[in-house]
Amino acid sequence: MQKDANFPPLFTAADAGVSFALKNSVFKKKSEIGKNMENLEKRISASLANGAEYLAMGEIAANTGLFVSQAPRNNANYDVVVNNHDLTKGCRVEVKHSRSGFKANISGNEYDFLIFIYAPSEIKNGGVLPSSEREIYVFPQEVVESTPKGKTGKNFNPKYIEDYEKYKNKFSQILDACT
Image (tube, rainbow, N blue to C red; front, top):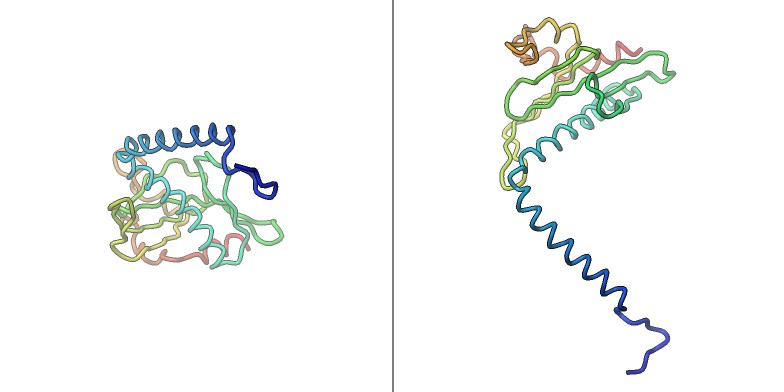
């Protein structure tokens, strides 16, 4: 068969090697996926927790007009930094997310506000199915610290706060703290 100068060959020897390597990596990944299906709920829960931080950042920005940024990763004390426009005032925000109960584990107190996102849902067939509307609460650090935390000292339950509903979508507190 004569080669046409305008059309390169579809496969070369190098392509065959790459194709073989890709094929083997795909098969390997399929077997790893089977093993990791057991950890699916953990992976989805971790994704939801990370997504909660981005949700909180978006809600703060949309409801206050302030500058919002993610805190450095692996910071155990707070997740979000909020500043006014001239960067003269700011605050630190810890974000907690729960889909299975109206509670969260809190460690540390080096934040100014806790945003608690309660999004009741269940993981089914590899997806998240909400069971009711998401609720977002903005609690000042002093309120969180004065709330009983259970035996471990880390279990935070907003229902122990008198009139906890008044903190629902209370982003104005963050605006007041930063202006």
